[in-house]
Image 1 (cartoon, rainbow, N blue to C red):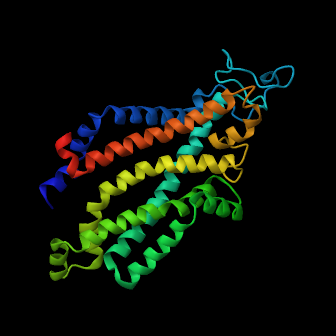
Image 2 (image 1 turned 90 degrees about the vertical axis):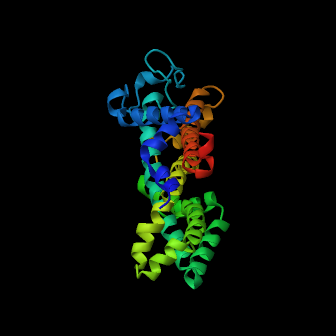
Length: 293
């Protein structure tokens, strides 16, 4: 392994270069804020997210505007919007981590297998990947979500099944390049088995790519989950989700715009945060960018 590879893999050096980037720090701060809100939601949420309060609506039955008691106001059923957004963060993060983790696992397995073995095995796997990429991800996700009964874990599985293809294509390209390197040929000559070559020599070189795509993929997953929930085929009420909060309150877009703006802003900020961190990681872990840090 070269000195550049060793340096790239050093966690302390990577963290130090990452901390020099202001946008990355902003992204990390937003992620920490959302994660803290989601984890501490049972303790910091002022109300039960599904509690329909009699005094949570006006005399005319309209949602209450933000005030001292209801920080973000109430929704169309008199539920505290701040509490629902906090618990909705749990939904987005759980699905983001689980779905993206499954997508990374599937994409890495497909990509590394196709890139290493190539031949008819690689052709079949990559043609299947191309076939999956030909379908619009949102349309495919809607079809799969409609087939299965929507729930938090089903939505995570559906998103994973449509998001693995990009990872597979990137991993395939890098593995194909690594498989032709001299040190891999030397390992084969010395009698190293396929498992040893894949997991001891190829996979460590793919870790930076997996980390970057894993970080960037969470933002895509959060946006896709919110879209599915908004369309009614994602996480089902009364479980709070940023997407279904917007869907439930869209009729009050003009009279009570905070009901749509606040959960929408939460979705955008979380997706932006992971994109900022992912872009910074891509630059930090790319050896061609080393001279710029």
